[in-house]
Length: 197
Length: 197
DNA sequence: CCTTTGCATTGATATATGTTAAGAAAGACT
DNA sequence: AGTCTTTCTTAACATATATCAATGCAAAGG
Image (cartoon, rainbow over all chains, first blue to last red):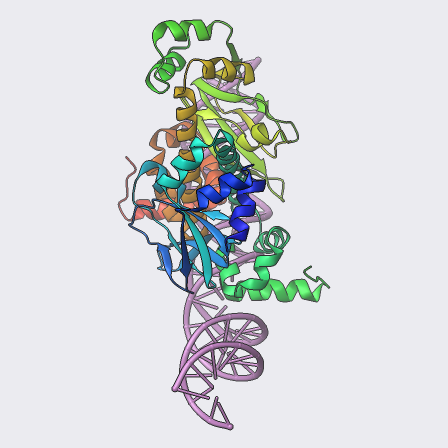
C-alpha cells in the first residue's frame, strides 16, 4: 500500500523511513474510478494530488465547449491547480481520472506536518515549481511556433508511456488539434517510415 | 534613481527604507539600448532582471527561424529564464530591449543579501512563482482552444498599455499568428464597432 | 452471441490562418 | 525637405487544420 508514495517521500523528499511511517498515519488516500472528478471548474482547489497508481488528466473547457487537456498525471506525479490553491480562488480547470486511480491527497495539514520535518520539503517544492515553469514555457513556445507534426513528435519523446495509455483523441486534445488531424499526421509520418519508440 | 525598484522593495517585499538604502549600495544597474541583449539562447541565465524603466521582451526562435515572443516586461516587472537559473542549464530564449531600458540586475549575491533580511523575500518569490504558473496555464489553454480573435481580445484586456508601446507584429508574435492575420482580425473587429480601450 | 459504444481512419469540403507581393502611411535620419 | 526604413494594410493565392459524414473495428456489456 502506498509504495510509490513512500518511495517518493524517501528519494525525492529525503525522508528517513520512520518519519515516513509517522507521516503516513493520518494520511488521506482515495480510490478514484474512471471519469470521477477530483476538481471541477468553479471550485477552489485546496489540495495537491499524488498519483499512486493510475492516470489523471487536468483540462479546461474552451469557447466551443471542447476539452483542452493541459496535462496528464501518471504514477508518481503531482497534480493540482497551483494558482487556485495558492491564491485561494476558483479554478478554471477540471481534474478527473482516465484510468481507475489511487491517489494520495495532500492537504494543508499534511503540508504543515511535513514542513516541520525540515527544509527538504521546501526545497523539493521549489524545484517542482521551477520545473513546472520551465515545462510550461516550453509548451507555450511549441504552441506558438511549431507545426502539429512537430508537437506530436515532441509529445512522443516526452511521454512515450502516456501515448500508449490514452485514446488518440486525448493526445490530440493535449496538442491542440482535432483527432482527425492527428490521425493524418500519423499516417503521413508512417508513410515516411517513421516508427514511434 | 531607481525609484520604481525601491518602491517595489518597499511595497512588495515589505522592506523598511533604511534596509533598502543598504541593499541598493552594491547593486548592479544597467542601461540597455534598443535591441541590446540581456540573454541569448545557449547561455546560462544567471540573473533576474527588474525593469526600472523601459520595455523588454523574452522570445524563442521557432523551427522556421521566426521570433515567438513568450512575454513582455515593462516597468516594475521581473523577467528571467527561471528554468535556466534554477537548473543551471543553457537557455533556449533571448531577452532584449524593445525600448531603451534601465534595468536592475539581481544576481545570486543580491538574492543572498536580501534573503538574510528576513522571510519576506522568500514569500514574495513564492507568490511570483505561483503567479507565473497560473499565468502560463491560462496562456496554454488559450493557445490550445481559443481563436486568434479571442486571444487578441484577451491580450488587450490584460496588457492595454503594452498594446500601445510595441509594433503590431510583436503582438502577433506573442499571439502566435502572422502580422497580416492580426491586421485582418483588427479590421473585422472594427467592422463590428469594436473599439479598444 | 449479438448489440452497443467508443475509437480510429478516410474522403470531401470548409475555414482560419499563412505566404507573397505591393502600396500607403508613419517615423527616423541626414 | 527629402530619403530611407519600418510598419501596417490589402489582395490573391496557398496551406494547414477543422468540420462533417461515413465506415470499419474492437472492446464492453447485456
